[in-house]
Image 1: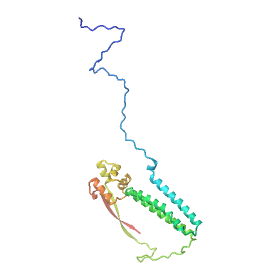
Image 2: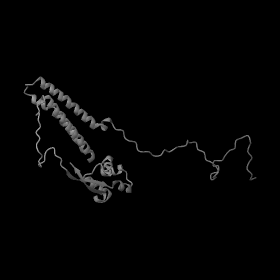
Image 3: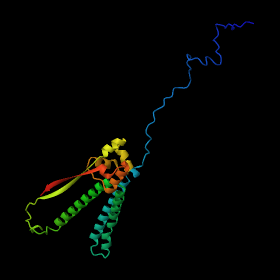
Length: 245
């Protein structure tokens, strides 16, 4: 019996064994599956919110103001048509209900804001209230036919000087500087990171860093606890004399 391998027919395709070169580093293994490209992980998708959730405050205020204007116009119309009715006082008080709802919605919205946004909204509300009072006074004055005193009495000032005199006063102006930007850089925090730890908005942190807003005492203590430093190590007060008058 010979040990030589049997000769193959050249007209037939070569038959490969079940395992061909199992450990050969020069044989390339082919696969029938298509190549798969793994995409880099991206940010998690933001859940879609409905229009009611996004603009709930604006929608509620708009509906309350619309109800107030409608009830106000209706009350005025009813009162003009029934000037001698016994229930006219009840009709006159009806527009107070939607006005109270508008005030309630504003206060509820204000309670959900941080201290800087509360200050901005309060100042805006005070400005609008003052402007409304001024316009109402001017309208009443013009509607009354101009029954205002034609002369204005000028009284001397309480400190003995004339009303038109000039007086000079010196005031102490205190400006507060802070080291928030340096402390954030040491911890490699962004303004958004610090705002999340404090429970305020990023605009509040930016306003404090740039000196446009001085934080309240509770917020200053929160900053001290966050950076594990004393308040004097974060904030520094500078005084200057300012001449006015």
